[in-house]
Amino acid sequence: MAHIDDIIDNFSVLDEWDDRYRYLIELGRELPPLAAAAYTDANKVQGCTSQVWLDTKVQPDGAGGPMLTFAGDSDAHIVRGLIAVLFAIYSGNSARDILAVDAIILFERMGLREHLTPQRSNGFRSMVERIRADARAALAVATV
Image (cartoon, rainbow, N blue to C red; front, top):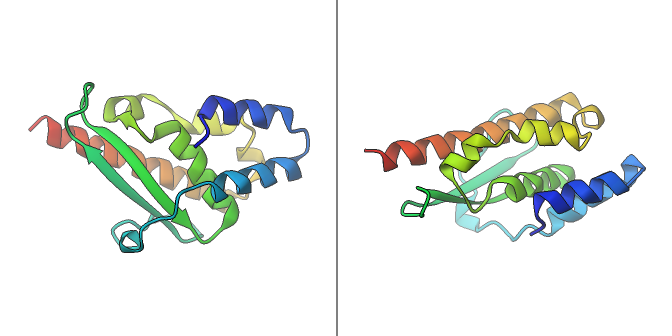
């Protein structure tokens, strides 16, 4: 999976939005397949126009606290690309690090906000909030 800095750099050299959309779609194609058992209502992200599933795995004993990794899928190609961007930002990080990073700022820095429909932007925010909620829950369990 691409690192978020590489994704941002690649976005900056693509002048046309059609090229950026194609790049997003390619990032989504690189996502590993989501396990069939993960297509559950509990993993479905509410607030997305497209169908989106996020499966969170927590390793409770990471050096910096609980570590979270994510798997996901969507029925929309561009949304799968947005999922890949989010995983590049968050997956494999500690819950504290996840809560310290504002993906919306990175989203805007890449120029995605003004080039996606309001529904897709809202869906992106819903995915971010879901990931952050999972990080908060992992921290809550770790401090009990």
